[in-house]
Amino acid sequence: MVTSPVRIGSYRIERLLGIGSFATVWLGYDASLDARVAIKVLAENWSHDLRIRERFLEEARLLWRLDDDRVVSVHALGELPDGRPYSVMAWADGGSLHDRLARGPIPVRQAGPLLREICDGVTVLHDHGIVHRDLAPGNVLFRSRPAAPGSTASTERVVIADLGLAKALAAASGLTARAGTPGYMSPEQDDPLAVVDRRTDVYGLGQLGVRLLGAPVRRRPGEPVRLRDGVPRKVAEVLRVATARRPADRYRDAAALMAALDRATARPRVRPVLRAATRVTLVLASAAMVSVLASDAVGGRFTRQPGVAVDATGRISVVLPEGWRAVPGRWAWPGSPGGPRYPALLVSPDPVRWRTDGAVRGAFLSLASDGQAERAPAGVVAQIPHADCSQAAVRRSRQAGIDWVIAAFDCPDRRGRLVEAAGTGPAGAGLVYVQIAPPPGNSRAFVDTLLAGVRVRAA
Image 1 (tube, rainbow, N blue to C red):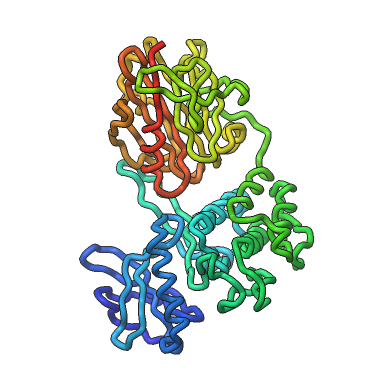
Image 2: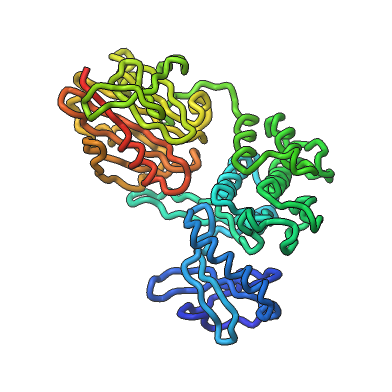
């Protein structure tokens, strides 16, 4: 039996949250901030093992450096009077995936997007050179996000936790301590000479996928996966590859697995290019028509440069984020289906899938130069409705000579943030409209960088 401490540091202890092999987690309360936190304390029987102690501290350092809302965040480190270290973390008030699965199967319509969100969180780790090595239901947490002012809607964020076994890729090999959760631990983690890399996490993600989307039958690694009713058939092959016994036969990382899941679950349907509750449509040109151009200055002449795309009229250009491509086209203003079509650009890592898959990141840019150009940017942003989203913020920013009005929305069904921006271009250029679905992470910095790369000129 674990005796509950009264206080840890400045936090009053309310109850026990969980006990693991190496640590105990308590729910603490900070009276000065009126906030609850999770406090992870190194287990007493491991307190004198310098290797375990260093692993515990390294987890806190990794989480501090990541600072991403898809990974549990650390606020502080401390030490108990007996010398045991503890870390103060954000409290995942929604519990764990293990808790939810214990109550019964998660509906298929929720399980598919959930698996994708988990892959998205692990992609954050892989992008920072970190291998988790223990992806199991108990390490997938849920944290609620408060509703925006004036809204009663609330959303949940999947959070990846417990990096106690994670290491930098340079050090993550079978020569380090081997541990994990049975049923989710990859075969190579039982081999003291095997290399442990991102594909080890792919195996864990695949096993999570089997648990969420597969029928409750026993199977060996690499065998076909029997799916639950309602899961697209192609998902079975994706999960089979992810859980292959040999690492070389799996997807290279979480991002590649996520892309394969997206392809397997894509449905042939028509959707407006803009993922908003509007009647906006975009007439796309061939990708071969994309010109790689830039402008010498706002309102200036366009000249050829790599990494910058321009629409077919040569009036609007944008610096492309690394790995993104562009498709030019024409756009009809919302509410005016028979009206004029304005020059437009669609930029995304996968412009084709943007039209059918709400999870694909990207941006849409257009320029109006007639009566629409007289409209105030703030009114344009306010016009675009997002009934299923909660507004996060409205701000102004001057980028590349354009004064932008920027509104951000949190949209649960799109698994992320959606940003609307409008601004008035230089004299005679017109009104610039941009919608952005930024990659997860620091969305504000991404949005400002993209807008800073927008150039427009008069007709």
